[in-house]
Length: 536
Image (tube, rainbow, N blue to C red; front, side, top):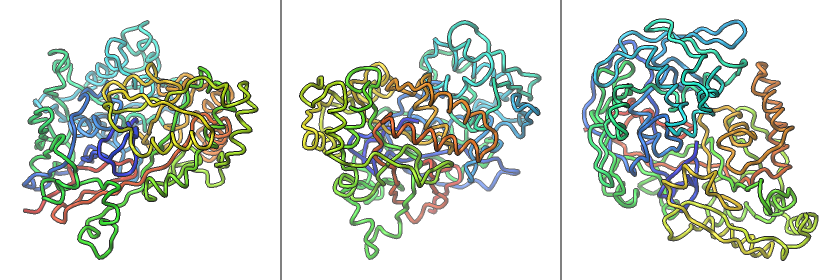
């Protein structure tokens, strides 16, 4: 998913976007089911945050909004501690012998926050609403499009998804077009979460007072000031160990708030890296460093000049000294990326051959292009996110590298985050600066969703029929070893073809107060907030 963050902890620019600052924390995931409710904890957890752009699960496509949505809503399945799909509202499921039909058995007694019981028909409504063109979801095709009949609804040719049926109040049958090893993973994404029809139909601003099913409910939201989630004491899973989670919105620099005790968790900005990594310092014992299944890159508008020419794409890639940028700009808080799949994900290829920094080769690539020389290139602009101020040290350094090594002057155009995040495809210039964090730990979530010719998130319009064919093979190959080998082959093809310019993989540097227990982030950047407790 695309990332948006304001203070800089590592590098994320929108789930992915880089601008010039640290991740907003309060990263989250719905609680896992429990056999019996624990003794309810007291107190509150204080976090830094900014206003969500939406609390509508069908619409949200960036991590800032997801941080709140994944506390307020939930779905059939969730990712467990091992990052594998496990039961959530569905207590179990069966898969047909041909791998195409899933039968989900819902828990009895799961309720929305207002007390109404969740039924299978609520999922039918929620998914059909997500696919309805009038809803305007930019994620429904990616996460529900495998279901038979979903594409027809997305295209406005039908109102009902033929592959989804409520067999009774507690049984949901879902049929997909072909067997896919990652289908259950997709159902952990917010687009597939259940919403209350009456709540949604109460008005277009319904999500300012959402009636969800998650471990927390929205108690208060004063825009630009405060957002408070209160514990859902009737939650069907592990009931939260704190009474409330308080987000201080736009409240200043997270590190300042952390030092003064106003928040309990903070991302670490570059200016603080020496202090927090000093083993003799006061912060070191509170520091958590977590690798991130994320990918920061520069996208090319491959459908338009000059980046419809592979040689120009290769030149801009070869002209960037990522090792130097990581060392000087990021102080080694991130890892240079040769490829697309981050370390730790299924299918990561240690033997992948990247396009190395080589100025002579970069200039030779320009000469081999149809332009023949740098002076013949058309004007080039890179689109990024911001409010018209500083573009950030990272992008400044990248533009400087191109100027110095290629002799190309690249202009920068900033768009307001709330507009940029949901309009990249239409608003991009010749390049765009983007980040992506795994929705689930599977290579399909990077290679297929970002580079398939038909993918909504393929913002640059990259198209390669051979890649598309291999992606289809890899996605339907149920032999995991064979599937991963195909994904490795696809990644190498994308790198050779300079489908994008890989920059770096993230690590998250986070401080957690000693009185906070159970705050553990996984490699997706998520923490189970209902498992957190705070000592008085």
